[in-house]
Image 1: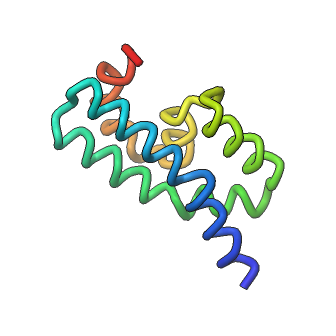
Image 2: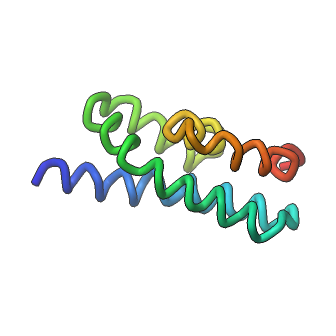
Length: 100
């Protein structure tokens, strides 16, 4: 039950805002739909690792969530760190995220 609560909190207060921020930046920069979809899929794949890290380090989860809400945390770096296998997707997105 505790893990379910952490998963919900991470999805609601961390993953959702990070995913939305990156998707909005990509769409504003007119990135190809395929790039937006790849990054969105990778963000979803990052969820289990983010949940595990939040469970092991609640302070990291709180500061990262607050940073995402305030814009102080770079969503791309949080998601890339949580899903290292998604490096090609983030590399394809980087030119569109650079201007924002």
